[in-house]
Structure formats: C-alpha cells, structure tokens
Image (cartoon, rainbow, N blue to C red):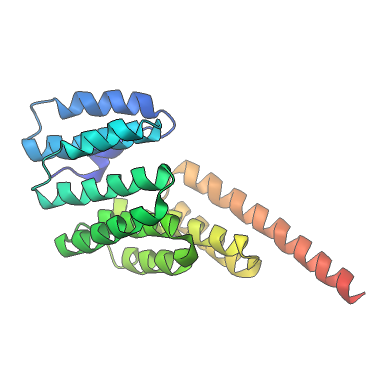
Length: 216
C-alpha cells in the first residue's frame, strides 16, 4: 500500500480542485497496482467532498473496491468526512469508530490516529476524551509522519480547552504543540503554534483582569 508521504505530495488542502486533478491522474497511472489505485481514488473522493460536491463524492466512494483492508479503512474515513462536512456529524461517528478499530487491528497507525482525530471533530461533546485517546495512541508510535500528529492534536486539544474557558490548561497544550512543531512539525505548524500561544496568553490576561475587577 501507499506511504502517507506519497499522498502528502499530491495534496494541497488550500486547492482541492487542483488536488482532485492530481489524484485522478495518479489513480489512472499504471505504475500503481489495483489496490494502490483504489487508495488514490479515496483521495479523489475527499478532494471532491472538500469542494462541496457531496453526492458525487459519495457515488465515487461507492464504486471503489474496498476488499483490501487498508482501502476499506480509507473508505470509512472519507465517508465519515463527507457526512461530517455535509451536516450529518452524528452519522459520521460510527464510521470513524469502525475506521479507528480496523486501522488499529491492521497496525495502520497513521489512519488510526486520523480516525480518532476525526471523532473529536464529529463528536464535540466528547472532543477532549477523543483527542486525549489520539494523543495517547500517537505518543507510542515511532514513524515520523505519524508522530507529527502530536502537533495537531495538542493544538486541537488546546482550542477545545480554550473554548471551554480553561485557559491555563489550554496554554499548556499550545506550548506542547509548539515544542512538537519545533521538533518534527512544518513551518506552518510552528507559526500556528506561536499564534495560538499568543492568543491564549491574551485570553489569560483578560481573564485575570476581569477577576481582579470583580474582587475590587
């Protein structure tokens, strides 16, 4: 099956239309075997979904031969993402749960963490627990691309805590995100981590000022 870095090279999430073209071209390339082409096709579906063409993406995923287990995980993930993006988050949750369980069984660590991270998005009432589960899982892996999830997960948990008004806890998570970003993250992740820390410190300062005023 394909390494995640192969898919990374084809993705530009700021340009899903361009990504769709690249993935369609790759999925038709005979250098890839049938299972790899199916895996690439799941990303065509994701790119179409990001453009809001949900029915078309759903039909494409229907047409993929998902007998190969890793392809099956990716189909579950992309179906879940489609449901979540189209306003049916509750329906996406069991798909992400299935994806996480199957990926773990297959030792597809990157996909297992991806599924847990999506559960935190689709199931906001339990976002903190899902993200902590993803962090626990990612902390045990050694593959660098999968380990990079530590940046996003600490960042996501920081914003979950921040939105709950738990600014001190959020700042810890943002600082951990920055540490991981400096170690293994991208320049963009490093920038986001610094910005999150600055915003959280501003929130903390505002909270302290409000508390001081109440006591005065």
